Every structure is written in C-alpha cells, then in structure tokens.
Amino acid sequence: MGGTFDPIHHGHLVAASEVADLFTLDEVLFVPTGQPWQKTERDVGPAEDRYLMTVIATASNPRFSVSRVDIDRGGPTYTTDTLADLHAALPDAELYFITGADALAQILSWRNVHELFGYAHFIGVTRPGYELGNEHLPDGAATLVEVPAMAISSTDCRRRVAKGRPIWYLVPDGVVQYISKRGLYRPAAAADRPAR
Ligand code: ATP
Ligand code: MG
View (cartoon, rainbow, N blue to C red):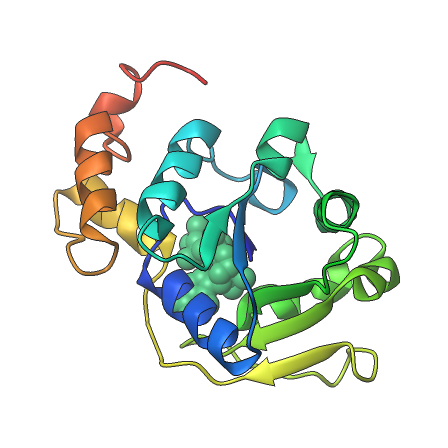
C-alpha cells in the first residue's frame, strides 16, 4: 500500500487490514512515498517523520511492515519504480497494490499505466466522498472492495493539528504523541524543525 502517510491514519489501517483478510495476504507492506509528484502544491512532511509514523502505527501487527524503497530512491515517486523495486526484492511474491477510490481514479493519469497492471493486481477500496468505478480499467486489472467507511484524511488531520484541534482516535495514539513531540503540522513550529 503506497501513500504519503502524512500522517498515517485509521483509514489506511482499516483498508489494509480488510484487504489482507479478504485476499489472505501474507503481508501488507506500507510504502511511504519519496517526493510525490501529485502533491507539488504543498510541502510534504519530512520523509523520515512519515516513515517513523508509519512504523509506529504498524508495529503491533505481525502482518504489517514498512518499506523504505521510495524514500531511499529519492526524488519523485513513480508507482512503476515502486513496483519494479518490490518485484526485484521479492521475485517470487505475487504483488497486490492497495489503493483508495480517489487514487484509483487517478490511475489512468499515471505514467506507464499498462506496465503497472503487469506488476501487480490492483485493489481499489471504497473511501467516503469518492466514487469507485472500474469502467476505464483494463479487464481483470483491478478488484473493487468495500471496506468499513472511515471519513478520515491526512489533510484533515494536518488541519486539525494546525488549529490545535484533537486527532485522537483518527490516528493511532503513538502517532498523536509523535506529532506532538516533533511539533509536526504546527505552522509556528515548522521553522524550528530540522530539514531532512
Ligand atoms: P492526503 O489528504 O494528504 O492526500 P490521504 O488521507 O489521502 O492524505 P494518502 O497517503 O494520500 O492519505 O493515501 C494513501 C492511500 O490510502 C491512497 O490510496 C488513498 O486513496 C488511501 N486512503 C486514504 N485514506 C483513506 C480512507 N479513509 N479510506 C480508504 N482509503 C484511504
Ligand atoms: Mg491522498
């Protein structure tokens, strides 16, 4: 499951858990992006913070782990590179790419879209506020799955922190504490943060 995870929240975790169960996956690898080209309109939080929050959020689940492939590659993240690197690292694995309805809708705007479908089977999960349709997807390339509706977004979590509003229960407790400890998403504190 690729994502910015800025921060990771319970919408991501429920989707991953549900898909892992439905498709009897051995493992879900969360892959925080490097510098996502879709999000140039705003600064994305430091990669190491996003990586550590993802580790904190997934640590207690023996089937969840976190991959650094996109962060360590550096530069903008292209999902073809992510899948090529994972395929090289795990040549015998059957790869599934878990994505929310909004991201699936953007698949056709991704570079090398047909190469993507060759690397992995795509699983599109429902997300409140977004329509999930596979009318433009190649036959058999993606499966659409309904997951418990979690109307949570990282954007909303960041806005809440910026306004001093709570994010308890939207993200795991350890992530609330990490955000507070590092002063993330608070405009005034941003300048104090060491660049990574
Ligand atoms: P942002 O608001 O910064 O875009 P986000 O909440 O959309 O953050 P991402 O890191 O962009 O989180 O999402 C990673 C993946 O998780 C995407 O495929 C996205 O569609 C999916 N996803 C995010 N939130 C949910 C949710 N609440 N329910 C289902 N899928 C989700
Ligand atoms: Mg998003």
